[in-house]
Image (cartoon, rainbow, N blue to C red; front, side, top):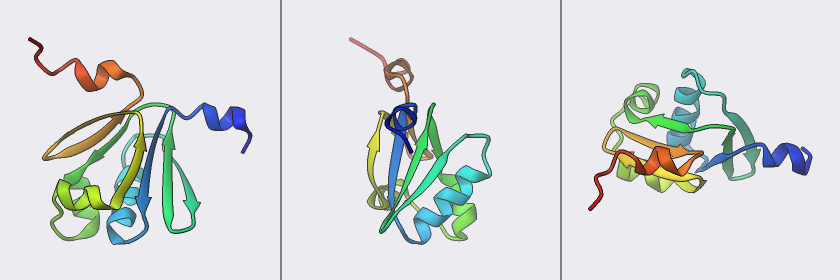
Length: 106
């Protein structure tokens, strides 16, 4: 992939390979998101031109077992973008506003 094509991706998630990562990739593939998945040896690199939204309920459904966000964060080793999370999701936003606009200020 050329450097120009690489720069088109605005958000990245890096997942350590294993069942939780496989379930995450399956959940993302079943969503309407356009995610590019690259095999990086012991890791999966998930790249997008927009936000990457991981719904933990969808990951649980693919995994066939409960998973907490805290346990999932061990699998997610790195990201590029603006992170937003709660108990039900982890999102990497391409734009800062998506991650901070819903939090009260002052």
